[in-house]
Image (tube, rainbow, N blue to C red):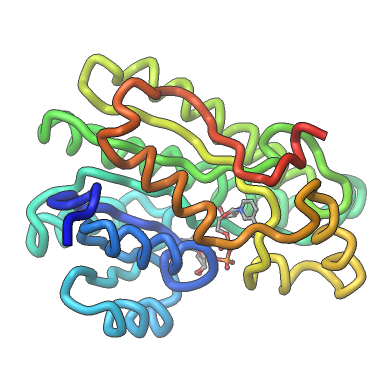
Length: 250
Ligand SMILES: NC(=O)c1ccc[n+]([C@@H]2O[C@H](COP(=O)([O-])OP(=O)(O)OC[C@H]3O[C@@H](n4cnc5c(N)ncnc54)[C@H](O)[C@@H]3O)[C@@H](O)[C@H]2O)c1
């Protein structure tokens, strides 16, 4: 069966669970080979074993630059090179207002959700230049466009806005190297990230805020990733695609 990502190799960070796991599965369904990267070794190995030879799991902390270099080494050994990077790993952080948010929690969220994306771009761009191109997809959020005071904290909002800034910077700087860099702003998807940080009442309140009246399904986010990863989006660069059922428009 032909897929639109046949012959391509992708890295999906945070691929052990939640949306990342679904992105891995959908990219493989479109013909890609995928390096699943995550801190969570147990779940990541399980996902890779379940999918089979088109994936490997590599333990990886996105806040550690040496770990990023290891991803490139493992990709070279197993699949040759990397064409697609999906910077998906993220933490929500506690749902607290600025005065109640600890400095430590603020810094952790910025480190994973923003600095992790920077390190991924910094590690992978030279590799993609050597390979004559690539596609980087950074996962931002509707919280990258506005502060939603039902769910995220200020650190999350700042990090996700920053992801759009990094996307634009990289896109402008490396367009002439045949590297396109775009972001995706998902609306609310019911994943462990939300379940761990929100009460049942909060979840119920959030689920119904989209004009569509339900949470997004992870696969609906994967479709935008596949499009941006593929050659069908060859002239789209430095953009973000909002996949939120109309929340940001309302
Ligand atoms: N769930 C939502 O409603 C929603 C909405 C918009 C954007 N997002 C974003 O989508 C992405 C995925 O979120 P999710 O809801 O699937 O979350 P999740 O918590 O289910 O999964 C996140 C994964 O990232 C991994 N991870 C965390 N810190 C890491 C680190 N330092 N290095 C490597 N891996 C790490 C975790 O182990 C986990 O497997 C995140 O960037 C999140 O901010 C989520």
